[in-house]
Image (cartoon, rainbow, N blue to C red; front, side, top):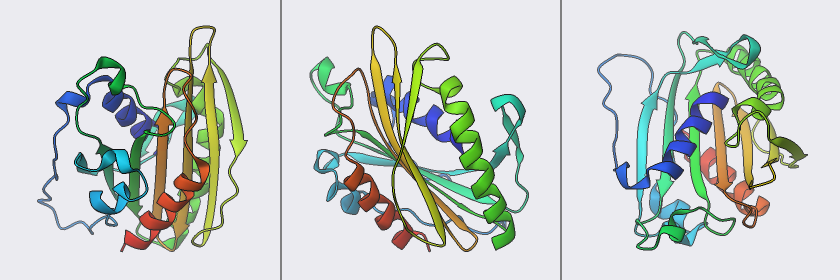
Amino acid sequence: MTHRWLARALVAVAVPALLVPVVASSATAAPKPPAVPPLAAVAKIYPHLKGGHADVTREKVYAAGKRCTQGKVVKGATGRDALYMPKPAEEPDGLLPTGEEPVVLISTARFPSTKSSRAFFGADRADTKKCLGTDGPLGPKATMTLTRIRVALGSESWGYQVTWATKRATNSMNLITVRKGARLIGVFSMALEGRTVPSVPKTITLARLALKAAR
C-alpha cells in the first residue's frame, strides 16, 4: 500500500485542478473493498474540505516487493482509495497543503482471510519503515525522521509521523494503519514546504472514523 498511496497523494498536490469526483465501476464478481467515510464526515474533522470533493477509486492490492519496489498483486484482495480535496484555491499559495489544511487520503483493503491480512499488515509496516526514505516526496537525498504515533484501534494498529528534510524544504505526514479481521485501513495526512505538521489527534480521529465506515 505504501507506494500506491504516496504516489496518489503527491499527484493530488501537483495537479489538484485535474482531480474530479470519480467512483470506479466494478465489472467483476470480486468481493467489495471496505467502504470509506463520506466527505461530509471527514470535513467535520478537517473543515477546509467542506464544499470540496472526494476522488474514490477501486484499486488492486500489491504486496511489498524487494528493494523497495512494488510487489505482485495479492490474489483475492481488493482495495479502495479515497482522496479528499478542498475547493480549488484562487491564490497559488492556497494550493499548498499545510498542517492545518493537509491532503487527506484513506486507503482500505479486504483480504481473503484474516491470516493473509495479518501477514500483509506486518510486511507493510516493515516496507514503510525501510522505504519511505526512498519513496519520499523530496527524494532519496532527504533526511527522513520517523516518530511513533501511539494508537490502539482494531485488532492491531501502528502509526508514524514522518518528516523529509533537505536544505530547501521540509515535508511532513502522519500515517496510521489499522487491521480488523480481514480488513485493513490506512489513513494519511500530508503537509508540504516546512509548514506546520498535521495534527496527530486529528489523524487518530480520522482513523477511528475510517474503521467505523469500513464495513
